Amino acid sequence: MSVPDGIWFVFIFAFGCCIGSFLNVVIYRLPRDKSLVSPPSACPACGKRIRPYDNIPLISWLLLGRKCRYCKAPISVRYFVIELLTGLVFVGIFYLYFRTDLRAGMSPFLGGGWLIYLLHIILLAAFIAASAIDLELWVIPLPICWFVTVAGLIGSMLGSYIIDPADIRRYCLLPSTSDIFFKESTITSLAVGAAIGLAVSWTLLATGLIKRSYESEDSNDSPEEPENGKLTQPQVNHRLEMAREVIFLLPIIVCSLLAYWLVKTGAGPASVRTWLASLSQKPAIAGLLGSLWGYFVGCGVVWATRILGTLAFGKEAMGLGDVHLMGAAGAVIGPLFVVMAFFIAPFFGLAWAVCQMFFKKTRQIPYGPFLSLAVLAVMILHDRILSYWESMCNL
Image (spheres, rainbow, N blue to C red):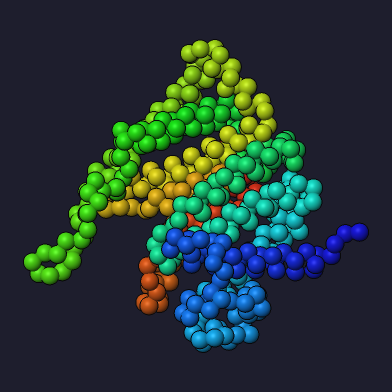
């Protein structure tokens, strides 16, 4: 007996609202270096512990009249908005994926489609939290991005055990080296080479042979007070900081290109080529490397923009949080779609700029929310983008 859609929608919406309630905890505590587990939720104004009956998503906020039960301090509308938005996103993605023809090749929810749905709501929930923090503090906590990246790597690796690998490849349901646009050996060599290069870069950082960007040598590098009595921040040579980031990226670029060259030309030890070729024949490894390559591509397109923009204008262009945000997206949706999201994001920025022209009280906002909206748009337009690229490749 099939479960009626109404029950599915109510359950998923309620589940999404509960996740949204947890996201509110993340949004408040994570950038303030507080534990997400303890102590239990309490009113920021009076410190009184919030009882379970006052912590019901959506309902408690309305019943309490947007105020703390004890001290009557106002409760931000953000709590209600995040819970409602998360619930609506969860239901909307479920409906589009499993009750419409929007995604061709999507397995039924209980027939394996749940894995793709799970990965995508993890991505979107994390991006809701990251965007809210970015809007408030102009920073994206990297643990959020790392959590999504790990989920993408594990999910892509397990995908072949749950969904037919042929469907994964044909409909690009999950990242894989068996991409319909590139040879398996190409993505495999690039991903393995980039991973080796990343390990080299991390080693160089750990040993102090290279330095992190925007990391002052002087721990006492605090604002100085000039003669006029106003505090000024120390001057930073942004172009020099970008040079440090380029040095960090060089091993990744060189190793990935070297691995590709070895496979493409047949040069080097035959054992290396054989080993690289064997990796793509294992569906689980193919999924893992495909996700890893999506991560590198997502990071790369934003990092290149950050470096070139900073070198051109002499001030920091985009943040490293945006780099890791798109890397996380690439680990879940794959390299092609994360690149498309990167190029769609400016249109959301342009729409916001137009709003500013008409509503002068609007403020500048960081770029993270635009990137997040672009990722959502690409997930919705997945098949249209796939069809477009297939037609381009057949020209």
